[in-house]
Length: 237
Image (tube, rainbow, N blue to C red; front, side, top):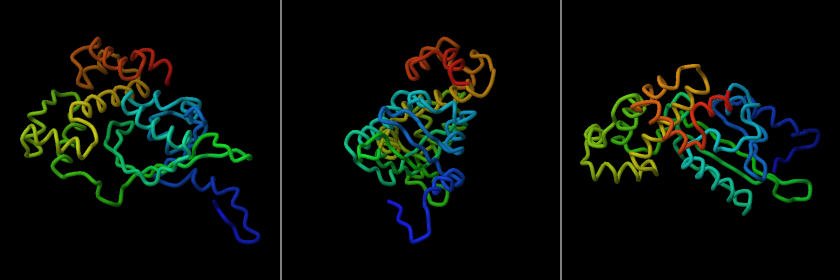
């Protein structure tokens, strides 16, 4: 709770959060739908305006398995009243770049003290080293820069200087996701970004994101996002 000295009204503290650099400030309702977000959140999610985000859930912006993790954290805060403090995690930004963040979420309460949603702050970590094994960092960088190419686990392990089995284990420990799923997530995220931001033909988007053809992209994208690339573009622009 913000406490003030005599003569100080903290009611406009939110105005400061609107303009802090590298800080996502947002609120969600009891169903996990975005009810407020600052400009930096809009930038991270790759939306044009906050109106493109409000009323949506995280399913609209992340592959299914990533959205599930975020929504599970939200449910813990909203349904159980837990507070999430400085959770370190890696996300893939709108430009398909790897971003390390720390997230804090607290319950939002109505005037009667009942939980009606959550308030969240996600900070991009840009002044400290991310908690990532340097060998895995090399592989992650290679993945992000080469999503349009074939990314064999054997080749990634060689870049990391590890055996295939050791690479799989260390990668999962560092990233909380398998190498295969990370590549799949990054490709879907890049495809979603291109679809939202450009008029590039879907067949070309497929090749830009490492899929063999448009039908391959459509199958993978629909499974992850719950709608086809064409439908996603129409609904999120």
